[in-house]
Image 1 (cartoon, one colour):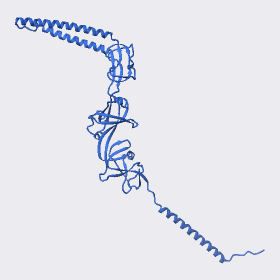
Image 2 (image 1 turned 180 degrees about the horizontal axis):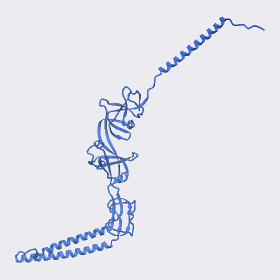
Image 3 (image 1 turned 45 degrees about the vertical axis):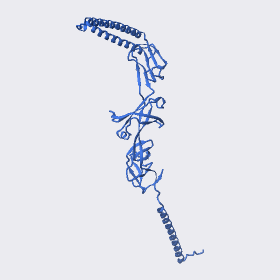
Image 4 (image 1 turned 60 degrees about the vertical axis):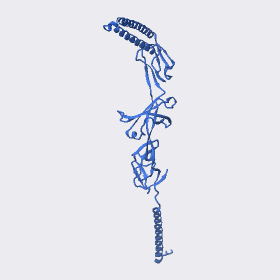
Length: 379
């Protein structure tokens, strides 16, 4: 059996030295690689947050005051029966939805009793006039008789003056009775007191009505009215005097509807709302797209503000603040003094008279903090 040979001690130490040297080389290489990666991450610049801004400058601005109002007809009447009687005719013009002109016949009632009343009143007037002629004749004869005698009458009874006065008053009373009878006969026919639309008919042929019973509802279509209420701040922004100026009207979808004339405004406060009231009218309502019952936005002319900034409405936060960029690119907040609002824009006063140009953040975020540096991008 052959014998195994044992390595010499010198070779074992040689292999251990080679293995240890290789380990040191690997550890050194790994250490150099980790240091390089750390240096690369530390030297990379951190990008600044991007904020959209709009540069606005101080310039004069004409203020407009907006308010909402419902449109009403100037005249709106519930026509009632003035006399009692049976309805004999309801014309086509009296049907709901019909457009009628002033003086158009709407409803007729039975007129026979009132024709008789007129005849009796005419007879009474004729009799009163006959009595007046007799009294005048007596007075004239008495005056002539005393004149021929060259004497003065003892009193008024001698000249029949009391009888003459009673006869004159009787004639006046009979004339008034005749006028009343004729008016009742005229009221048998119901006519439109103004041009407009019939909104509701409340009676039918054959129906008997009494004085005060409703028969027709009629609304004016030629003249419309609006009333807007303004706070003290809004009233102070109006161009004075307000009467005679023109206001613009817009639909709920901001579609233009024309103009309205300011008839009067101010002078008193509403007892409930404690606000100023401005009264407007549309005279040419038949040519206007505005209809009775419309709900419109009224834009009233205002004053001119010399130190104004016109900024986007989106720049205002829910807390009522604005964010702007300083020349160094830092975000800072401010609380603006809002003068007026016009659709998607705001008119505010210049918060600092020494600054004439501002870079306003158009879409402020909840993460904004005072003093942070950002990259402003113009809108």
